[in-house]
Each structure stands twice: as structure tokens, then as C-alpha cells.
Length: 166
Image 1 (tube, rainbow, N blue to C red):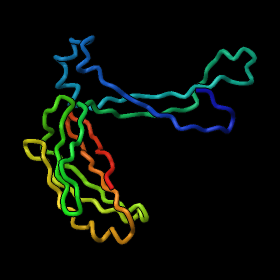
Image 2 (cartoon, one colour; image 1 turned 60 degrees about the vertical axis):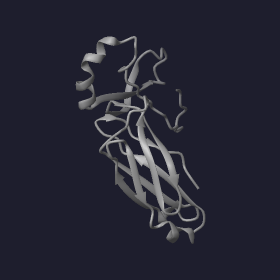
Image 3 (tube, rainbow, N blue to C red; image 1 turned 180 degrees about the horizontal axis):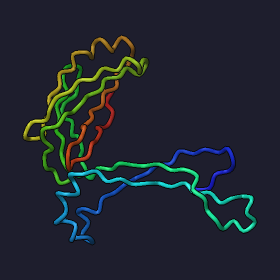
Image 4 (cartoon, rainbow, N blue to C red; image 1 turned 90 degrees about the vertical axis):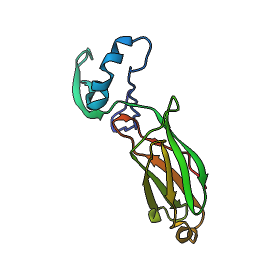
């Protein structure tokens, strides 16, 4: 990416794990260790000195540090979401249940996003959650209520969000 002087841009950074990639079978034996500890990464911003006529020396102008946890992909499968309750499951990419971690449901009126209400529950052994949504009626006075479930993740499992429901 090249930026002109004074120009700014958002940059999306995506990090993938090689665990589970058939091209790297030797990583399977290290899976436990890789899931248990964070990995530190650095991004470096370089600039060529515009006063150098050769433009051949890139200089470090900044950067960022990232702490990345390895985790399997998860998804939220909602079975029921109405004004009283949210019921669903958190599953891995191969349909195994995520267990013993929290799920949040956020209720946010479109007309007043600052009035969001959050409810939480813990997953059971089957990855199921049931969350009572008692604040739904209170938020309806602000207009259409948008609900979304959020799985917070745990060691070896990545966080995920459901689609938004209205």
C-alpha cells in the first residue's frame, strides 16, 4: 500500500493458523502447545526517504504489535430468538460442541444504540445456551430491536458472532 503525504487508510489484518492444513502434518503433534499460548507478531511500517534520489533505503516509520491466539473456528446456530428467550448452540467447524464458556446476547435498539442491553449464559456440555431476554420490552419503545449472539471463545476455540436478528 502506498500513501501520499497526509493520507491515512484503514488496514485489515487477517491471521491464519496452519494447524489442520494437510500440507503441514508435522504440526499436529504440536497442537496442544500452540493452542495454549499466545503468539506475538510485529508489523512494521517502512518509508523510502523522498529526499534520497535513489529511493533505495527503506526506513522504519512505525508499526504495531499483535498478540494472536490460535483457535478452531466456531459458529453460533440459533434455534430460537424472540422477545423472551434466545436458544442456540455453539459448534466448531466440524460440528463438535463448544463447551463451558460464555455466550452473550446483545439487544440494541436501532434508534438508540447507546441503550444496548447484554445478557449472558454459560454453554452446557452439548454447546447449548438458553438466555432469558427480559429487557426486550423495555427497548422496544426506542424502535426496532436488533439482537446478536457473541461466543467469547476459550483456549483452542475462536470467538464468533451470530448474524444480526431484528
